[in-house]
Length: 67
Image (cartoon, rainbow, N blue to C red; front, side):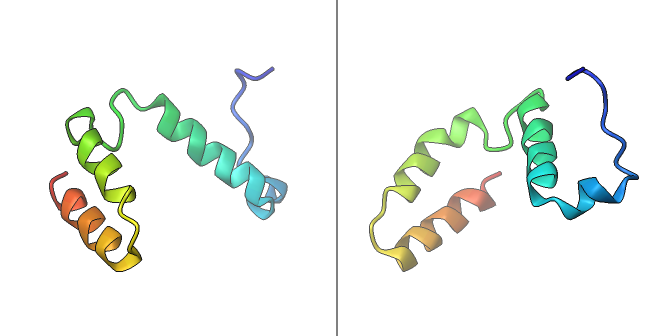
């Protein structure tokens, strides 16, 4: 049954944040190429490891601009 597509017209799916987030996760998981590229993985890892929040956000924005 997990291969069936859910009926997204039913309100119950849109009211339950768990259904919405599961759908988003499934979509990203099924993409042929990752959203955050393999080429930028090390830069993303370095950026999120920065302790100071402001500096971390600046670095993440810099890496995102490279996408």
